[in-house]
Image 1 (spheres, rainbow, N blue to C red):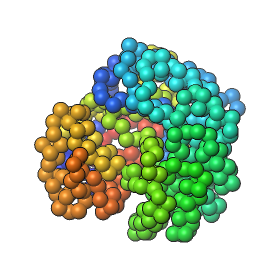
Image 2 (cartoon, rainbow, N blue to C red):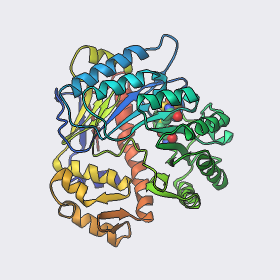
Image 3 (cartoon, rainbow, N blue to C red):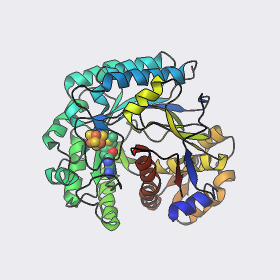
Length: 417
Ligand SMILES: C[S@@+](CC[C@H](N)C(=O)[O-])C[C@H]1O[C@@H](n2cnc3c(N)ncnc32)[C@H](O)[C@@H]1O
Ligand code: SF4
């Protein structure tokens, strides 16, 4: 209901958003400002029941070499002839470290077409971290890392069904903290049944002590196609835990970088999701450009086959109206709690106030946002409201799209109401 209202009013889209499996661009228009890149590596040693992302088990006789070849071929198709710089590059998954030296190959392939002017980040599972692996990624040009800890508490990990020894996470973080990366992010999940205020506070403090420069704290979400053993705690309890996080971050000298992230003052942000424009490579990777949002084929074997047959491995495309595209930008700017007037103007050629003046004025009156010299910032009240809306968006839009795209027989179109 709320997402429908926001779609109809903020995006002025009375009709539902539709992902079509036909009518894709054959050449992407990458002539857009602040273009970032994302590479998806969909393999994990063990699959966690709570995880919604596209991944398959990485076993003996792995499909990794063919997959890396396909990613390189997709990069050549998309970036061939493109020389404008990429502002960032992120590897996500799955567990991208399982690609080993493939990461360096992909970075070199990208840099053979276009420079990467900003940070290069990678998500790491604790079992993939060693001093040698850290040195290999630094050598390859990786500058930032994000470690999936989820919790240091055995009970919370057991509830999540994540078979990781907290000691392994501790060692992995200590290794990364000393390796020389410009940012070390730690992912924690809050809202796990049995988690207490004290245990969450302890998780945050342990991450900081071991060298994290950023702590990302995600509310536990029960995706419809996940195989969770337990359900997340009720929203009221999540709200209390979020207050604990805000307070603990302050006590540790961390500032809020977005609705769900906190970082040490003066350190760069690790963020793979909030880019003005981005191009994605690999199975299930998404691409956001001037007026389109496209999703690659989810199944890794089908992705490799699609790349081999030439052309782009696009599964679905959603065409944005100009208003919807700007509203989409605003949605993610709100996640960062920072709506920058100049950035909006540079991207869309019109003023923020002209496009969303009424909304921003109402947000000010309701105590959700505050006007600043550069634009608007979300207040703590606005951040909590966003946390609620983002979870609804995840259930109504992301869950539905990913479940359909991941199914054995993906539908011809996905309609999001
Ligand atoms: C691709 S995963 C992590 C990378 C790495 N494979 C690992 O497991 O450490 C990215 C992050 O999403 C978060 N996440 C995954 N499933 C979630 C869920 N159901 N609810 C909340 N956060 C979730 C976790 O914090 C996870 O570290
Ligand atoms: S949480 Fe990480 S290791 Fe677990 S299945 Fe998801 S991507 Fe793989």
